Structure formats: structure tokens, C-alpha cells
Length: 291
Length: 228
Ligand code: SF4
Ligand code: SF4
Image 1 (tube, each protein chain N blue to C red):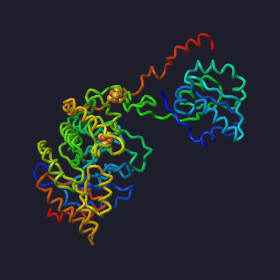
Image 2: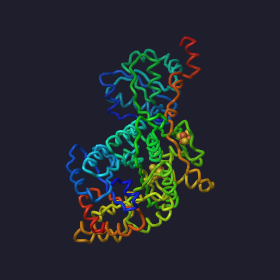
Image 3: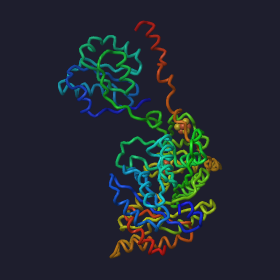
């Protein structure tokens, strides 16, 4: 079943993220694909995440598709102008990739090629609008397409904004993304269920499925690093302590992720696991969460 | 105003490799304000080059080096010093170097890099900046420019990265979108933020061809008429 039909069926949706590596070795991707097949409804492929140059998202999506998974093409506006974005979208569609997650993208200065020229010809909201136009059979300057795609576009939102302005701005932008065509959302990683509940109270009204982001903790150090460096992520001290004192970090990491999933389950339409190197442990997390 | 900064010493030296006689030019305009090519820096450069055995055939600091007519007339009494030089070291922005190249038939080396001002109008004290985008959005953003106040130049709203009101890319800097939100909230105009801002026409951000290809210095034309 495709991501779209699972979402429409009302079933609790599970998506996971894979990040291609730097180079042409695809062994790991193939292994992960085999492990995830049958366990997740769709698999996101990151687009040179954190502005680090890697194997492309589109080629990797195609490989996953061959393995029977339903891929979600993550597409940032960082590296391509409007010509390249539209052309790559058409290319994705003819390769059978239907789900697209539109993202503005981190600045190149954060990655391993800080000398790069950032593009940002479009932003995430505009990219969603462009996808909508392509679905209608037109490019963004109203030229008719010969053969039109039927994309299922999604977007991201950060429920953990820490000021009133940021919280409202996230909701306003979420609404704009829906108007521009977003059919589902995947969120920044959630560790505090209360924050998420507060966000969902407002987001529910938009009637667009939200998949809550889950990052399994690998260590106390990783949790502290995220608290310090990643906006919108807040790992409470209690969880950090658990990770710091446990004798089996893997087991505790899996347990915490599974518990969070259980608590979130009633509040949203699904979860999105960003395993960050722990892709092979995703089945264990799902088992522990009873999914 | 154009902002410049001096190139690394090694790079300047590499330009002068094999050239022993150098004429130095500075500018009393932006280069002086930038601290890169005023009288003090020209003097310093003379000494530094002298110390490593270069012969300085002469030097001059002209009020506006970007203006060819002025360059020509001010250098008229320096013809011999210029001719004795293998090259000219120009301690200004790229426009100054090009103006001297066009006015004098000598190799001209840039001593400075011209740096992007990011939309500010020089060494100004205020924080307001304009990138001359050709499609002003200030009505929708309550008088705060999203292209410059937001570090990523986002025009459809905040990214997911702000933390405690500060920008994810610079914790010292206020998030431009939160400034915009608070301003509009105060003006009771938050609804403006719901508007979809269509992709910008970036061709409008390119200077008009006429501006690139014509020189608008009336003085220059006068000068040509006089046969200078
Ligand atoms: S929106 Fe464009 S024209 Fe208006 S201030 Fe910003 S850069 Fe300048
Ligand atoms: S944190 Fe605010 S100012 Fe910084 S890039 Fe994001 S929206 Fe722009």
C-alpha cells in the first residue's frame, strides 16, 4: 500500500528515514531496505542532510522502490533553482517516486562544503505550490505539461517552538503549507509529550495528518548535544539521566523511544523515526512499542 | 559606499613578483573609510614594500578613484613616475582598480578585496538593510525586510530553527521572523502573514542592462569633450 492509501485508511502510519552515505556503496541501504520492508509504510530519503555532500535522494528512492518500499523523496531548495527542482520532480515521477517532502534546507555553511553558493530560488511553501501546479498539469509559469504527475506532497513542522511568536509562526506556516498543497506533516523529534499535546491541540483543526518525529537516544551525550544545538528538540533531564546510568544503552534507548511512541499514539496519525545510524534497530523499537 | 578589505600580504607580493618598480594609488573616498586605501595605508604600503627592496616610483591619493576623469587629471603631473613603474598597486575597491586600468596603460594590481555589504549602505550604525530585490515586501512584513532580517532570507515565514527568539545560525542575532511577528502583532495585522508570497522574480534583482553598460558620469563626458 502506498503512504497515501495508508493515511487515507486511517491506520496508524509508520515512516522511517534513511540517509544515503558519501560514495557509491549502497550495501547498507539495501540491508536497511530489507529490514524495514513490511515494517514501515514509507521511507524518507534525506537530501544531503546537514548540507553534507552524499549520494542523491532520488537515486536512493529509486533503489528503495525496487526493493518494494514506498519512498518519500526529501527535496530541499538549497542546491537547485526552479528549473532543476521542477525537472527533478518530473524525473522522480517517471521513476515511480510519488511522495515528496518539501523542505527549504539548511545553509551550506553548516555542512562539509561551506564554500558552496546557496540557491534558495524557492522556499518550502513555494515548492509545495510548484508541486501542486505540476499535479494540475502545468509548470510554474503556466506552460502545459505533456503527461502530468500525481505527487503526494508533504512538509515539515516544528512543534517545539519556545516563544509565543515562534509557536504562532510555526502554525501560520503550517497552514500556508497546507494551502500550498501539503497533504501530511512530519515533525521535529519529540521527547516531551506535553509540548506535542499543546501543539496538536492547535494543529488538529487543520485536519491534515501529522506524523510525530522520533529520534532514539544513543547516549546521554547525544541528548545533551541535541539540547544545545538543535532548535526545537528538548530532551528532559530525566531521560538524560536514564541514558547516563543505564548498563545497556541500546536497550534503554529503544525503551525510551518505544515509550514515547506509546504516549504519542493517541494524539496523532503516525510516527516518523529518524534513527540516525540506528536504522537496523527500527524493528526492535517498533516491537517494543507494540507496533 | 563600497567596502573593501586589504588582501593578504602574500597575495599582494605574488602579484608584484618580478616587478621592482611600483606606483601606489589610494583613494580618499570609500577606501579611506574602509581603512584600506587612505593616505595612512598608502604610506604604510610604501614603507613595507620599500623594506623588501621594491622601488616606489611615486604615489597618489585621489578623492574618488572610481572616476576616470578625475584619475586622468590628477595623474597628469605624475606621468614620469608612472612610466618608470612596472605596475600600479591600487588600494581600493574593484571599481577603482578598473577605473585606473581604463585610464592608464599599465598593469594594475588590486591590493584589496571588495566585500559584500549584505544590503547595508556602508559603515552605517543602523541595522536596516535593503538588498534591492526589485519587489519590495515591506508592506506584508510590517516594515522589516525579510530578505535581510532573516538570515536565510526566507519570505514565507520562519524556519524551524529559532531558539528563544534568536536565529539558529547566529545566537547573537534576533530571529527576523520573530521581529516581524511582534511588529505585526502590535499593529494588529497578523493576518498579513497568512498570505502566500509567490516565488520572487530574481531577474528583477539583477541591475538593469543600461546601468551596467553606461557610465553616468557627466563629468567623464565633459572630460572627453575637452580632449582629456
Ligand atoms: S523587500 Fe526587497 S526592496 Fe524591500 S527592503 Fe527588502 S530587499 Fe529591499
Ligand atoms: S531562525 Fe529566524 S532569522 Fe534565523 S534563519 Fe530561521 S527564520 Fe530566519
